[in-house]
Length: 82
Image (cartoon, rainbow, N blue to C red; front, side, top):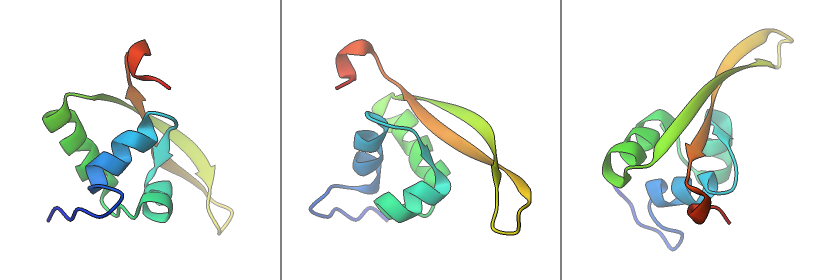
């Protein structure tokens, strides 16, 4: 379901964020209101022809355990960066 808000669709918000920074699933939920980040990344890649790099990183969770999460980066050309 595509819901357009004043700040755009989820994919549009994700694209704008990735132009400036990387993002994880938790960041996507807290900052952009995106619950299914991997699905929105897939849409961004297919519909908008944006290459997105994925990197698995280790983090410590609230139980002091090591967990692996995926961090996403947009592979933008120099003209697209701000």
